[in-house]
Length: 87
Image (cartoon, rainbow, N blue to C red; front, side, top):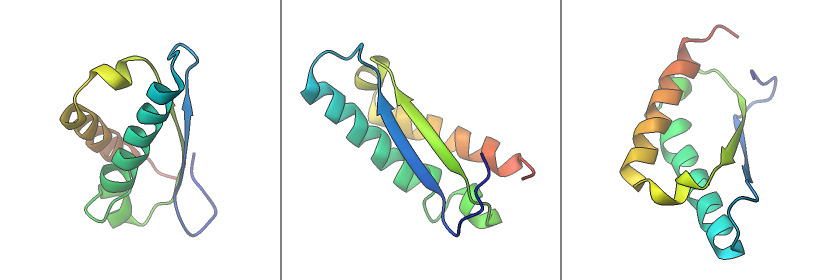
């Protein structure tokens, strides 16, 4: 959702379907890093347009199985979709 604040914010929540706390934390770290670098990073289309969003990412069990490169590619697609929205 569009944000009134000066910066974009990301919240990460992890499904309880991921049983181990180690795995939940790993999924959370992976999503947080991808959002920092690709979703709202310096080269992101969202950042270039100057639009600020509040985003909630929900980690599912597949977040641990998919490669980091695939997560980055998905984050890039989401950034393009967000940049095309009119707040």
